[in-house]
Amino acid sequence: MEEKKFDLNSIIGFALIFGIIVWMFYLNQPTPEEIEAEKAKKEQLESETKTDKEKTTDFVKESEAIIANPLDSVALSNAKSQLGAFSYSASLPSAKDEFTRIENEVLSLKVNNRGGYISEALLKNFKTYDSVPVYLIKDGKNASFNINFGTTDNRILNTKDLFFEPTVTKNGENTILSMKLKVSNTKFLEYRYELKPDEYMVDFTVRSQGLQQVINSSQTVNLDWKLQGIRHAKSATYENRYTEVLYEYDGDKDDYLGQGEFADDEEQDVSWIAFKQHFFTSVLLTDTPFKKASFTSKNIANSSELDDKDIKVTKEFSASMPLELQGGELNYSMDWYYGPTDYRILNTYKRNLDEIVPLGWGIFGIINKYLFIPFFAFLSGFLPYGIAIIVMTIIVRIILSPVTYKSYLSQAKMKVLRPEITEINEKHKDNAMKRQQETMALYGKAGVNPMSGCLPAVMQIPVFYALFNFFPSAFQLRQKSFLWADDLSSYDTIAELPFTIPFYGDHISLFPILASVAIFIYMMMTTGQTMQTQQPGMPNMKFIMYLSPLMMLFFFNNYASGLSLYYFISNLITIGIMLVIKNVIIDEDKIHAKIQENKKKPKKQGKFQKKMKELMEQAEQQQKAKKK
Image (spheres, rainbow, N blue to C red):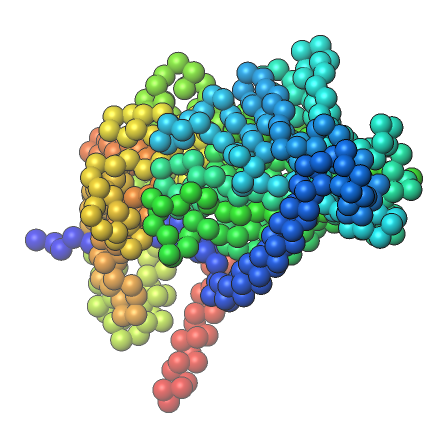
């Protein structure tokens, strides 16, 4: 009975596919040098932060003492000493820790008098994995917005420590909140918020009036924005994988910091900065690009000292931008976006914000934007989300079935030639060069291209990689259940483990197991097609056959269950298509007869084939000369 051999072309295809996965994981991991560098930066940042907190605490205590008795002459004198021209703001009734709330149907914002910035951002229509409302900013503890500037009387002030006076008005259906840091009734620094109905985007203006003689134009005015990403998903480490800083610069170029820890990454002419938290994002946009911007990203969820269940914050972000004075005044038209990382919503603003969604670069992103996103939106408009994934998978596999046919046809041809290839190998087992020459000559006479089985697998890689990015980024799948999976955007769980397996996790997901079994069956089905006896120095293909499903099992145990569902159904359909091709479409006897006819026909060699033959003959002659 003939020993079964494995299909080399299928192995190459799967190796390429899993190579893509390994490559993606490799890119998402910081290098040892980056880890060591970030440890040093972390210690430095902690030291600086501690010093800044001590200074801020002292300043705030003094400010509160002043504000406690605003009409007291001594208090006013102290305020004048501390705040200079801005002591007027400390004497107003608004000089206390109160807040003003503005909201619409989808967004609720709380703006504090102290600092004048948003201290709470609540998304009304969403819940976290444990049914808690989704906050991007909560109680002012995980975010700050500050303008640091010098005054003409040699003081350095921070707006986060000063009190603004709030005024709420209406402009039609829009709610307007004006926060003014006053020097007098006619001289002030203003933060102006305008919230429209059903919008996640908030118009935001920073402007000053009458402060030419107050703000020192010879010193840099700095804008600092900081935010800690609050955990929203079942797996903090998985959520953290898609949590990062992104920004647009030079008009329409965009970039990101990546998954590791970074600092002092400076860019010119930055027009928006996004602190992305997988499915929710905070974005600061400006109509007047920042001439320079630097960013930091500090990893918290990946700390080895924390268990996934104990993680409350994923990453800590900061951005620092110098502001330019125009005629001694500040005047910046900006916007805040607090909302979902949903391609369809972000794309409506026509500000290049759709680049925040990680759909893949180049051809992969194009496939997602113009094919899979609209197609899946169409299907999910009338089908349950799990069924929509299955239907999309079926259609994709049917479209790619001609590619599968070409691949299997090539495998069948190689199988027919195997006896002759085995004979050549035995005849020239001690002469690798001669063995290669005669094998290529046989392929040429028979009209068989040994690479034709590999190329279809390569052609499927763009689809594979595009979907690999689509499912984890599809906001529509968030908290949508199917069968035993309660959230298609996160992993499914059929059992919790009392321990954690490295690279696997502390749970068992069923969809990755089913996908791995389907891959294994497919690979077993392709056994016996074309692979010859393993050559010395070549990888053990049988080992790879078992390794590939195992890799799938480990890699996808913590990935979105929607992605694992797709690969499970995709492999089942591929198995079915191959059974039809093998048992109904392809007749190996006819293939054998056709190959024999091709071998009898005179074969004209192309220039490339002639050149290859000459090179191989020259190499053979050189080997013979060396032996002499």
